[in-house]
Image (cartoon, rainbow, N blue to C red):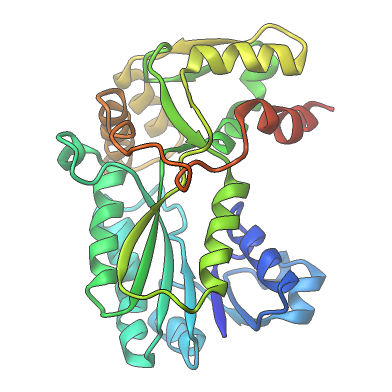
Length: 292
């Protein structure tokens, strides 16, 4: 039995699809089961509720062999630790209590870098990795840079010809697509031969700057798109205006500063770590249809 959290999310729903295609027994934990597709409701066991709730995880992990773990966003959390480790502690207790064998989690690059201690969301994510590993389960942390798909949050401004980040336009870093993350996660969940604790980088196929991304978007979309760097404080203020808590807005700002200073750039690019979807392909197949 494979349990999938966030089964209606951008990554989780693709993981569920791969597992069902492989005829694996699947159980999903869903806050709102009505958002599940008819296929998932028909073919998977459904445990309603939040996977941050002890009673829910106790039901969900009974008899489970493997779990896909992804912490949902909580922009109003009182701290980044509360958002990640605090949310996940009931599940970690349930992993041990129910003898879950393997967990695959969504994590981040940066462990061991000079800037990681002050990287906000990333530092909290890596602390969660340690919490999960400490339960005794076999664990694979999928360590990622920024997601290409995060740009979908800026489709309105991209339509007007500009997108924003608090990072230099000429800073080259890896970027990966959600589809590739889901592919790697599903493969690991279906493979019962691994054990121990390790990380699995998912880097995309190339390092690109935001200026280069703007050029590719312009070519694919058919209108000029430029990148504009915004000051970190302006970025943080915008998050606060959108309703994010002080702690979470600061965590996002700290992560951006750390990325500017090389957080995502230390992981060696190997064939195994390089996932297939190029940014141009992602723009063609994911971004452009949003404007059709």
